[in-house]
Length: 455
Image (cartoon, rainbow, N blue to C red; front, top):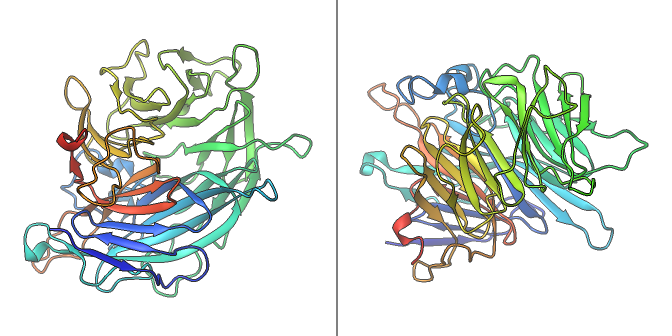
């Protein structure tokens, strides 16, 4: 069964949202961003998950990039049953040569009414029969315009953005007032931190990561930032200043290599890794200084563009590369991946571990769209995928999606309590962002079976 609802009046003025399409059988919400190309999406969960959900790991992973987890979230809007997503955009203005972008916040709830982004009222996803029907509401709650944005990450209630003008923007209140009508603009307060001095040329800030993804403590929180000039920097978010910065990656001729990604080891806030266009993965330990990396890995065959550590499995992290391979690693044994690399037939621009299921990995695989992977076995196994094909009959093979899957994250929307007082499981969605079609999507986490991947 396939029902399509189209509505061009989004209820949001200006250039933010100009068209929305919902496909019933995929729960596909499309919000096309006028002028800007959508790069990244980061989500966080507003209220507590059930105690018995993802036992043994979820509570420690709260207040983090991606959907925040359970126990430490209980002091934040626990009755609102909403999740908040941050979308970031980037655009090159050909006339001025400047790069512009936006950060847009949206709240996703299970409830009545279409919300500001004009979801059709009769669109539901059936899960477990009529009593389990999901009615999704999406409301735009904040927007700010400035330099182009290459990356956004949560450390609730803070949000950080890596910008094309060589700065990092901090939004201390971005995670406040979720689901509250009439709440103040969550992006109103902001702090801009330049990564270079006034005498230096600004270099793109390409990625960032928080050092508190497991602890959830905003006190003492720091950011690692990677730049196009091959440098890494550490930012004290409370002081709004750069604590240290160093040259991290270079090509054989000595010229700086774009450092596409950096990520803290969320089990050790003094250790971070970086990946760059020089195809090297480097490990840095801030306790011993940054004159040289602790380890250097040369397994990747092209630029390393994504890294994320698991909050549920110590020492484990995943990487994605322009060589189209996704790899899973143990930081203690970097000679080779713990599982054979899997070729997704598209550059792997983002990797995101599931917040409660330790073996599931979501990837944004550029020309192969968005692919969910299972890492529990002896090899990485594809589970499902999404590529927008216009209709079920026009299947696109891997490596053929021109829109490019660039941003992806898990979005777990908590339901209202049931009539018997129990806490149902959260509604599992994927929030995704693609580049050339400038489209945001909310998708059910069960997409096309991977058996159809090559059809």
